[in-house]
Length: 209
Image 1 (cartoon, helix red, strand yellow):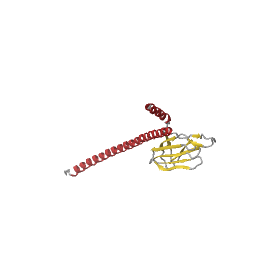
Image 2 (image 1 turned 45 degrees about the vertical axis):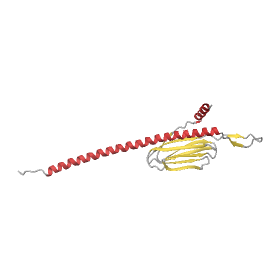
Image 3 (image 1 turned 60 degrees about the vertical axis):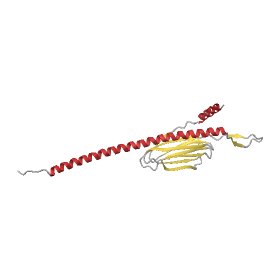
Image 4 (image 1 turned 30 degrees about the horizontal axis):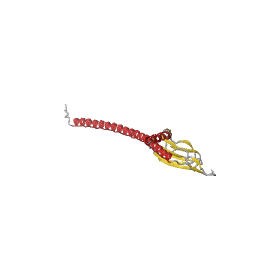
């Protein structure tokens, strides 16, 4: 019985996991890119983003609601994560702005994970007028497990991006160090040959005919 319950819960967790995709967008200098998500009131939305290439790896982020009310704002951020609940039905706007950059485009990776809409259940009293939120303990546990697995997936993807960025920086730094070392070795060799030639000419005995 216990194994059956565990298998059932695992199956429900797998079904409840949503397929969340990572999006990559290139934002030119002095430009802004906006994305839209339609939500119902009470729905939670998770936004995770990171600048993976370009300039000082910074970007301006802004989220506004259907009533044009500002929900979240971040200035010159390299990465971030924010969660909010929709306060009303409608289309929510997410904008990435690179207006502060003069000539450098930025590559952004971000994920938008919209949760399930809150379920409403009619009360079983005689009037049938009161509407209450239906919370089931098993559903809550499954939702928590699903959210935890999604967070782990997000963290793994962002760790992979960070590792790629750091490896690229290390390789570029290493190549520059090697080139500078070769240049220094060439300069030292040229100076040594020049000094030997100069000293040889200085101590050379010249015969006067």
